[in-house]
Length: 114
Image 1 (cartoon, helix red, strand yellow):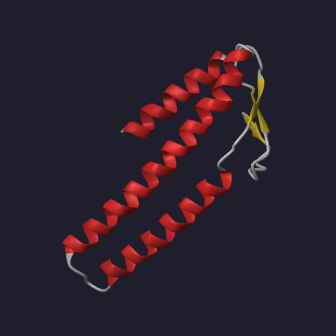
Image 2 (cartoon, helix red, strand yellow; image 1 turned 60 degrees about the vertical axis):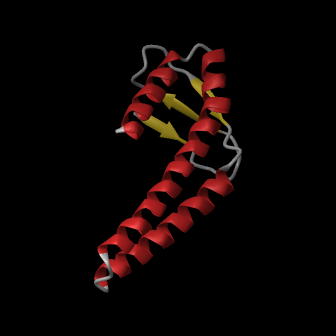
Image 3 (spheres, helix red, strand yellow; image 1 turned 180 degrees about the horizontal axis):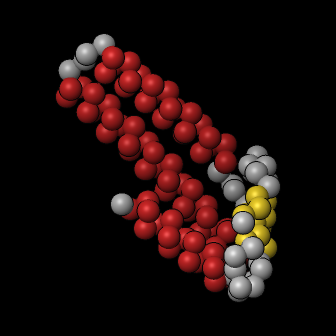
């Protein structure tokens, strides 16, 4: 079972994972929270516009181009989150010996790349 304090206002929060053989608690410092939230808001707005384009019967090529822009925005958001995670969360986890955090990162990256 995961426990999360979801105060993502740029402040640190901690994780503890009951399924780990040894329980670890490491700080998660998110330095780009506002930027990520803004990027996601823009991507959501853009995706809503794409849905409207489909409902209006707009040209498929136009829709595909706009979907490519949405995907690019989401990919860039993933890059920002991953960079933050590596620079802060993973460094902290390694420093305290939380190797499960590396396994979680590997699993997340595998899913992200599919």
